[in-house]
Length: 125
Image 1 (cartoon, rainbow, N blue to C red):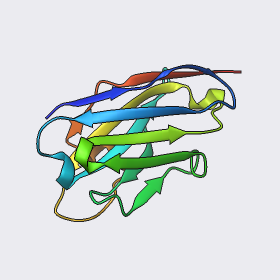
Image 2 (image 1 turned 30 degrees about the horizontal axis):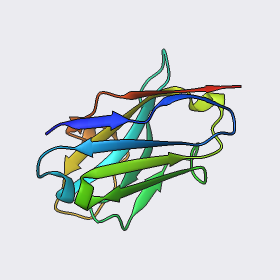
Image 3 (image 1 turned 30 degrees about the vertical axis):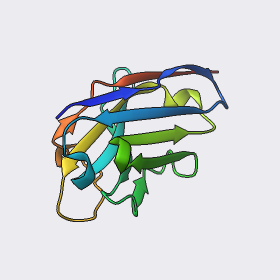
Image 4 (image 1 turned 120 degrees about the vertical axis):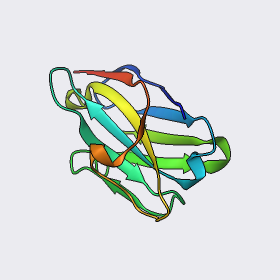
């Protein structure tokens, strides 16, 4: 299983950006997907999660109302649409996946078995 994240870049405060993560293999349709981020010099933190059907989502308080996670199972792709970006959103963003029999979301890093390589988002003030 491989996860390939893309879409990062340099934007200005207030701008929007959409990240994508393509998952290879047959895992995707049974996987809870998550987005995490890691600012420079800090620990990796939860951003958003979506259950395997796309019917349930969860967000960290810092991004709730500004970010939207979604998925297209036909394309093995999960997205993170980010609005109203601010410099505090600057980080390397990682997508993660874990196969599950349940329709659930996860916040913990340890709940995910597969990780992408990360894509850098830089928000200038």
